[in-house]
Length: 85
Image (tube, rainbow, N blue to C red; front, side, top):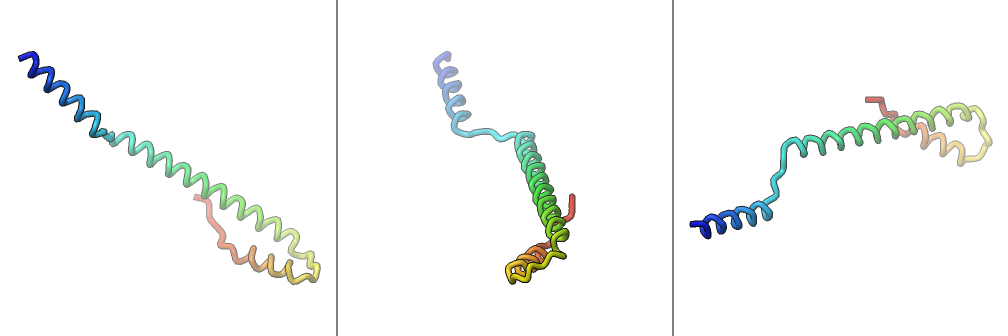
């Protein structure tokens, strides 16, 4: 009887090692952290776009006459503005 019990215990240990168990709480934490990271990245990116737009608005009145500056102004003005979440 003891050998049968030890065989069952060994079999259970082997099956537990092969099949990892995922907890709902751990998955929730992973998705929560990913959402926070994505929100922070969007916030940073929108702040960068907003600050670059402010810089180019300040220097917009300075026209050097070069077509590069007009092209750069067109590119900057065509960037869609992101709103803070």
